[in-house]
Length: 154
Image (tube, rainbow, N blue to C red; front, side, top):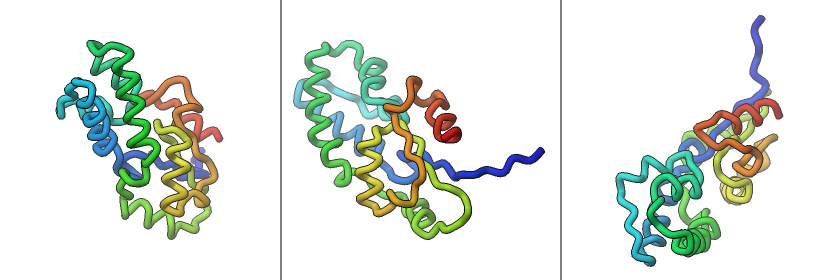
């Protein structure tokens, strides 16, 4: 039996927009204000991961109060101004804009739905998606496939 897909599911970071490097640089700048060095070689540890996961895995030596300050600065500079930092992936965004085929379009991401909605609206792509699933909809974050499985079920 052949199963025909009903939807095209897009990851967000690295597929619709490039954001991981910008996100990492903002975290580095925020950390530097508090005397915390985040080495460039840690970029690989943040890709596809939540900021909390990154802090726990890569900065276990930094005290909680300092991490809270870094997170607050990061939120103010990056999350609150996300459209200033992300770069659209032209091939993907052009495809989505022009797509008028029979499949539904969906986004499955480790980002928050606030960030997803903000960027997709800014790029004038939001209305193209039937389903948007973000980090707050799942218990297990990437690389666990839960976000993709949930999106596929929806």
